[in-house]
Image (cartoon, rainbow, N blue to C red):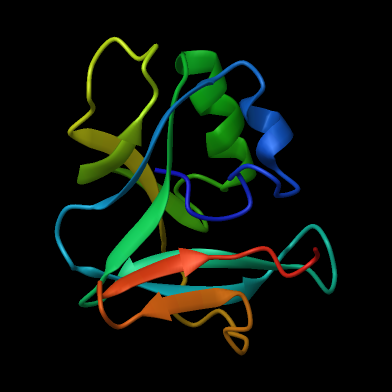
Length: 139
């Protein structure tokens, strides 16, 4: 479940060129919170992080192979800044070309609780749906 800079129209989406869009979705259980962090690679650019909490995270699901996952693991600093975890999801709209409706997806969880957090200028929280969504403020 991509929830930040890998989503369509964001600056890391090009890393998913060999992946196939499956659907928009949200986490099935409300056990997350979205925080905003400074990008390590681009000064002045922010990125989101999912941490334990009491809400849903909204994002996009893509299908990729092991090579694609290795590229994403490198970007997300797997086992350093983030860990990739398999989570249950609820789908919003599934691509008609998709072979099946997914019920689980990989999602990166932020692992550095002491890292500086920034004002959540790009984090949208919908109280009605108890969901966080990352938005593009560059447009």
